Structure formats: structure tokens, C-alpha cells
Length: 400
Image (cartoon, rainbow, N blue to C red):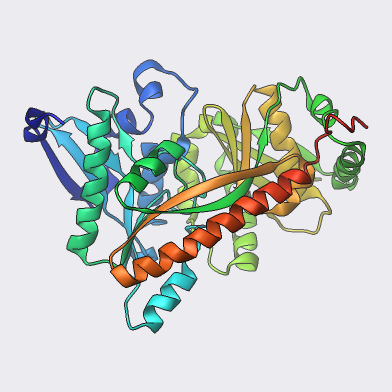
């Protein structure tokens, strides 16, 4: 690292993304798209529009246990060189990398696990870059400075720990080099094998899986449900009203406290409409179910689903099969349909390893966590291997 580079930069923390211009933030978050309109690597979740909507809608703010503490690295001309979306947390909700057992163990030993620092996209278990760096000759140096800056912030704030979740592989390697503990888990993702249409995809599956999917699709729509794909200006506030009812009903039944406010949906609908695919299900004159998806450069991300009735297999149709059809039609490489869910395997979604990185302040607790993670990583690897052995796709030996 050149000394003159270090002499001309400054590091600070802000408690709101509004302190940074959208252009500056996105030049680091999605540099290819911001500078050249290159859509291939676009990540909607680290965009200024998405993170700003979380804050302005009061979904991810101090009052909900997500107090923004974004790390900012600038040069002497106030150009943003890198940033990290970071939050002080006083709970572990909305993260999808579960550390409740860590918190319980630390507090039973007399420590205070909360507050902690979380580097993530709130409520969003989607892999991506967390060290957002503007391209240039000092990219590696900037990454290192950002990581060290996060660690310094953790020490100054006297938090128990610092967590980077759902990391791109290269960034997890950098964190491990600087002493972070790596943790793995799995999700189920669909990968486009160059299919021409949904039937072509079905042809790659075993005959039993093909029959099952065709049956589920038939049953899902036999009550007369009509499916609409909406994006851009097609999405109106009445659509968001209906979808928010679905979201609240599912949230109330699943985890008791939905994270997102009604205003959040209006805000992303206004600022990210072309990045949204809203799949709505109509029965007669009424909407009865829906799924919200975000469109990335090469991936369709399924985020939220809800329904006000009991419609067998409609969840699979809307969240999995409609998503696959959309990805094939728009030549997207992947569909990520959210966290967990072994039932996705039979529907063409294969296991994919996810990674997080953790810095623990207490040496004894850190050693205990490190030992635990060795066996946990082994378990995850074995589990992925087992799921792959039960792949729904035809093997070379069995082309039935």
C-alpha cells in the first residue's frame, strides 16, 4: 500500500445512508452498471434505492433494532472509494444466519452478546458483496482498510462481535485472512442449463419428478386462479395494498412480527420498479395471493410470498415454477428463492453453500465458537453432498 494513498483518504461512520449521494454509493455498490450500464453483475439489494428505502420507510432503523452505522471511505476530494452497509443490532432477528445459541451461551457465561455489529442487507438472505469498493488501482487496499475500519468500530463501540453475512466467496477469503471465523450454511438455487422453455427444463428431470411437477401445476390453477406478471409502471398502489395484506398475513403466521412497513413497498415501487417482478394471483375480481421478486443482472430473487386462502400447490407454482419460466424467458442464469427449504430440491433447486464471517471480541468465547464451526462446516458439507445425491435431474445412467 502506498503511503501517499493512505495520506489522502479518510474513514468515517454515518448513521444514515442519506449522507451519501445515490451516485456515489452506487458507483461502489454496482460499479459496472453505474459507469457503463453493464447489467450483468447488478445487485439490487446493495443499491442505494433499496437500502435507502429500508431506512426511510422506518423498516431498518434504531427503533426496530437495526441502527445504521455505515462505514465510509473517501479521498481528499470527497469521492467515495468504498463503503460497508453496517448496523448496530440489539437482537438477532431478520438475519437468517442464526446465532441465538451463541447469544444464549455468552449470556449464561455472564457476558452481554447485544449489542453487536452486523454487516448485511437487512431481512435479505441473498449472497453478495458487502465490501462495496469503487474500481481502481487501490481496490485491494480499500477492502483491507474497510475491514480494519469495521473491526476498529466494533472495538470503539465495545460490542461483543462483528458479523458479515451472505458473502461472495472472494470477500469471505479476505475476511478469513484478517482473522475472521468462517461459517457455512446452505440454500437451494435453480440454475439455468440453457433451457429454451419450461418443457425443456422438465426434460432434464427424472420422469417421476416431471410427472409430479406437472400435477402440482395443474392442481394449483384448477380452481380458476389467474396469474399476472407485473413490472415497472404496471405496478400500482392498489397492487401494493393487496400484496401487503398477503405479506402481513404470512408474517403474522410465520414469525409474528413482519419486518417491512407498508411504506417500504411504495418506495421501492417508485425507485426500483423496473427491478421488480410482482406475480399476483387473481380469483374472479379479487387478488388472493402474490410473490415479490427482484431482478438482478443474472438472477431472479424471490423474496416474499403470501396468500389469503388455502390453494394447494399455489405457493410452488408462483414462487418456483413461475420464477423458472421467467428466468428462462429472460435468459437469467439463476433463481434464488430464499433461505432454507429442502422441498425445493424436488422442484429443480439444488443445494448451494453460503458463507458468513465473524469476529468475536472475547478470546475464550472466540475459541469456543471456532471449535463449534469446524464440526458445523463438516455437517453442512456432508448435507450438501447428500442432497446432491438425491438430485431430481436425470443421471447419465438413468435417462428415464
